[in-house]
Amino acid sequence: MTQVLAIDQGTTSTRAIVFGADHRPVASAQQEFTQHFPASGWVEHDAMEIWNTVLATVRGALEKAGTSAEKIAAIGITNQRETVVLWDRETGEPVHKAIVWQDRRTASMTAKLREGGHEPMVQEKTGLLLDPYFSGSKLAWLLENVDGAREKAEAGKLAFGTIDSWLIWHLTGGQRHVTDATNAARTLLYNIREGQWDDDILRLFNIPRALLPKVLDCGAEFGTTDPALFGAGIAILGVAGDQQAATLGQACFQPGMLKSTYGTGCFALLNTGDTLVRSQNRMLGTIAYQFDGKPTYALEGSIFVAGAVVQWLRDGLRCIDAAADSQALAEAADPSQTIYLVPAFTGLGAPYWDPDCRGAIYGLTRNTGPQEIARAALESVGFQTRDLWEAMEADWQGAGGAENVLRVDGGMTASDWTMQFLADILGADVDRPEVLETTALGVAWVAGMQAGVYPGFDAFAEDWALERTFKPKMDADTREARYAGWKDAVSRTLSSRG
Image (cartoon, rainbow, N blue to C red; front, side, top):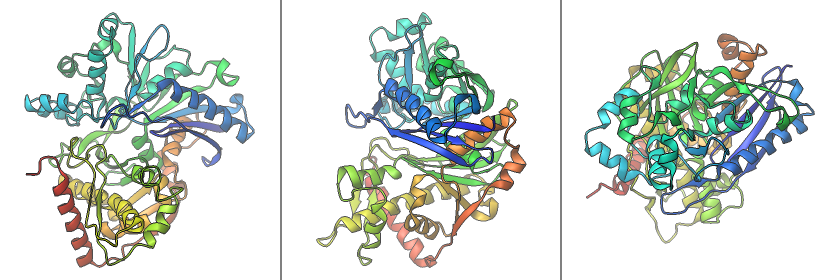
């Protein structure tokens, strides 16, 4: 058994990838699923639909690889983080649709807690801020708004989990209610200094401890799949939230190494080693990964809309037929027009943390068309990344490490135009690896390492392969002028303006 299966459960689709003995992809299957928007700023998923896409894609990937469950050494699971599922322990049925990390319905709840002076305590314990992005307020909302949920929760009849826990529960036939440290660290309920669920915060949100899963290392025995699902039981040996999994897949094992993943959103993680940095610039402190009970910490910046802005060009404006068309449209834009698109469709993440502002476009003229808007959409990803880059440098002097190089991954990095603009606006090299799907690779490596078929940290880092380096070409004056224009556009968009 030298193959490893990765389940990559994302915000808009689910993928299963079979990796070979050389930890390179052999075959994959993917399915999109429905996005539900029941109100402005609300985003939901059907957790049972997600579970069914996992079943379908795992079976599809095994078939395409010409392999079987008996030949798979281990499963690794990586997932969209912060998304909340609350389900019945007896039936396995969710009591409500999953509330997605993008959802802003609890903005007033978290604002009230901030106004009550609770944020310093929460940040000290969790590394996070009081924002509706995280799981805690979403779970509190479910307990207050789903009929009978609180009574059942207090009676121990319900289970809470992020998507990893939900999938493990079903993969193991309801035998295991567990999560890993990286997912726990994103709930707003987990003390990342002490490595346990925090009673003070549970009281703050009025959440019964009986709901919560057991927290394990990223590499651990999470359970074995029900043999009826895939023809044989497979050990689940690796779990990490998607951005932490990408950090592992990028082999960012040394303090100062920085990666940024461009999927639906954009998430930059800076390895800070055994130092948990308390950000002065509204970055997040989090767990990058945890092995043998020892956490490695990171500074993280979260951008809510990256690849999602391209989906908006396709599905909202209908100015492209496929995501890949955005690059050609941007290349055809009028260079004399300076357009800024601030994609605050569900508010702005780091370093602004404004859940109430909404998207805006600045600089429109009579000559502005789809080309210019497409260019501004792609540029918004670079501008937002620079916001994170500067905040991290201000928080931690080690942010200039690794020779000031950014390692990138995710579907959006396939766009050479976007990556070149990213290098230009940062004034730094951008390294794109051979394997762009580093999220799945990272968790496959963890599971494979635990199973004894993949190498350890050093050998895996040596195997990291560069596909291309994008070097900055923009002159410094232009770079600073363009970025100043972006900062002005954001200032006009924030809900607190005026």
